[in-house]
Image 1: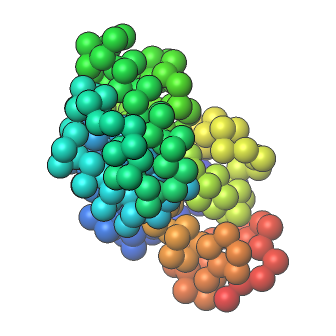
Image 2: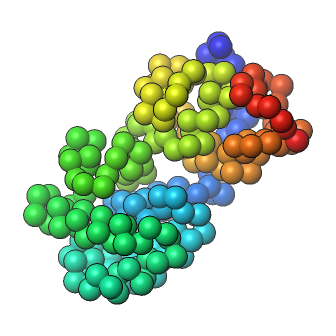
Image 3: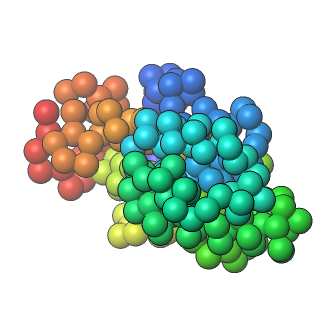
Amino acid sequence: MSNSNIIEVMEILKKYFNYSERTTLNRMKDKEDAFKILISCLLSLRTKDEVTEKVSAELFKIADSPLDILKIEDNDLEKIIFSTGHYKKKARVLKSVSKDLIERFDGNVPSSREELMSMKGIGPKTANIVLNFAFNQDVLPIDTHCHRIPNRLGWIKTKTAEKSEFALMEVLPKKYWGDFNGIFVLFGKNICLPVSPLCSKCVVNNKCCKIGVEKSR
């Protein structure tokens, strides 16, 4: 796969998947609120964007700082975030992360991957999202779409999201890193679906290797 093909595909996808239409976390990027981005990301795990957006907004009405989160009774916090799923585990993570932020980082969200991942409940994807969206760092947040689609396109050949991150760092020009997650999440949810992708409607159909695609529409 040539670098020119990757650049061509990225330019096409940037045009059709406009920044303003992307996910909740992308829309929060302009707010530059690292804590809200972190909490929204933790709530978004295995949750639809519209649910994350609604629940995050409700939570931030009463708690927009680590101290505020800790002041909420466990049962009350679980009720607020119930619709995101796995609410008991997420409530424990929100409390644990908020406690860490206060005790170890003076209430501020750290801007390094190592420090973010030193907190229980924060993995590579969440850390990279915070670094990308809150601190404008050149990192690649990789979710299921960002892992699946580059493999389908033939850009990389990896088995896990973590390996995809490092493989993409080798082939994807750095100027696209900041927009990559937002573009591919929207692309993956609307066109390049996990099963039976809408290849007939895809703007990069003739540039895709369709690796692993058994049936398309």
